[in-house]
Amino acid sequence: MLWLHLKIPTDSKIVKPLKIEAGRTDIRLNKNYRSTRCIDEAASCLIQNNSKRSQLKNVLTDNSSGSKVTSCSAGLKTFVVDKILEMSSDLQQITCFCNVAILYRRQVSGKAFQMAFRDRKIPFNIHGVAFYRKK
Image 1 (cartoon, helix red, strand yellow):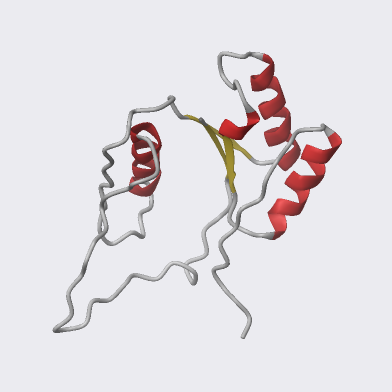
Image 2: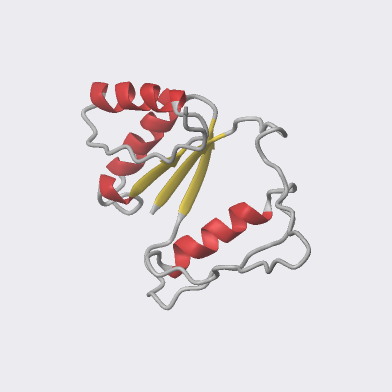
C-alpha cells in the first residue's frame, strides 16, 4: 500500500484539544476491524508526529500484517501523480492502483488530482469526509 500526502501547513484554529468535562468518561476505541497491521502501524506513526494531539492512541487489529506501506511526501499534485506512474512501472512497488491512497487536507485539492489522473488514464475513486458542513 502506498500513501502519498501533501505538505500543507496546519491551521491552529482547526485542531482544538478535546476537553473532558468533570463527571464524564473518556472512552477510546483502540481496535480497528478493517485495516491490516501495516496500515495501523503507519497511521500510528503519522499520528505520533502531531504535536497538537493531547494523548497518543495505539490502534490494534487482529487482521494479518498485509503489504508494507510506503510513504512519499510531495508539494505538487502533478508530481504526486507522476510518482505513482513511476512506481507502477516497477511492479515490485505498485501492483494495482487500488492499493494506492492519497491523503489531502482540503477538498479543493482533489480537483487537481482528478484532472491529473484523467490526463494520465489512471483509474481512481474519491472518498471524502466533510469536516465542515453548511447548515
